[in-house]
Length: 279
Length: 338
Image (cartoon, rainbow over all chains, first blue to last red; front, side, top):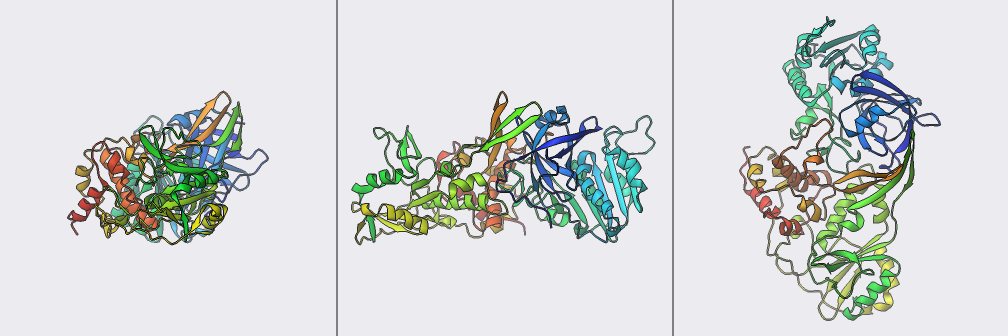
């Protein structure tokens, strides 16, 4: 179902141009990329990833947070290291390399007809956003949509416009936002995501939960969902590890015999439980 | 049958070198490995077809330790990929043993299957002919048979069998091998010779059931003890003919540069350290466990046979005496709560 890189040279990037850059938070920027002649080098399904490359520095695997068909690829990138420092310093017009798409992506077809619960922390909203936006684009195919999202502070919340204005206005959609600590001017919920999910306590009946965030948050969310009566097949997460090739060959992103880049990054909790707890 | 007499061996290597780079086991600077026959130093270097395994495997021929992938130019906002460097020049690996031939099959499965063909590996592999040297006298650290490898039937294009003074039996096994044989047929003789009998392995290993048993041993206390001597030097991964992990790095000068890939090692912390500082395998025990589980369980689950070919090089090279045969035996003996 997912799109797959079918190129002759899977390790060689295609050059694209950055056509827009938006500040999401003090350390997250969204980059909109397309071919100089227009269009995108490849189609990306929700939850799939691509290697983004600042040619003289290096490559990193990023989830594609949205792809507007034939228009641009969008990545939301947090500034955490060598490559992302460089990416945060570029300006519109910069040429980058991209290769992909990689990974299995979210089971968007299998989830049709279900209520959806999206649980994200920090930059973990970036991969989920591709699925959330897909659901909104095909709104009639999905039931009730509940989004629970948290960050360290108000400033650290990504995609604020969608979060506070666009998404809550969509039919049958609830958006719950929390920040870790109280701060002046914030009258919303304060506390960590897993506890907030338990407080909201969405009924597991006919629902699929999808979660992404820092590994520690994912682990606690999985525990909370288990406590709330969700079965392992109802819970989906998307993982990341250090990657170099993106095509299951360079070795490092394995959990047991599965490679996150190739066999993941999306796993159900049932699948994860079959693997060593090493993520 | 076709026979290569020993006095014709050098002529055959010379002839083959006219149309391909021929890699042979050579002694070199107190060590040994697979090096170009044409570029050897005949004064100092000796052809080592009689040795079992040379220090370094022929891994480097198909999967170079450093390999230029493509060149780049970045000038301000402009960037371009200038040229890619797939190398399809013809090569022959002459005299590799069954363990090293199996390791190439491992590499073929990794680089050429599961949805993606690595174009750099493929260009070299498609243009490489393997001439395997059957083993009849296993050495003290050889255990290929225990890992499912047949020492007298290397998985290659042509097998040579050393019958002693009379020469090598020459058997083409594939169309690629037959084609190569035709080109040198005037240097081969027609004669009947008998291959020697395979002698017993001094080191016995029984891999049966190990992958299945390891599936339940991820959290087993055995890894603490087994890994305690490991210094994370990574030498086992470099001398291993089947370790295929790699890194992709970049070199630049001014506006130009190139991306290259180089061997990496799962024994190093940086291998899995993420940009944000996290590392799912931050301790020696975790890295050690992952390496041996990859060899003995994970690869078997994925491809149907282990990623260890029983060549014994890591046993010889490990400075602290870690021995994969002992690890297999300890795993077999370990008690596991059911």
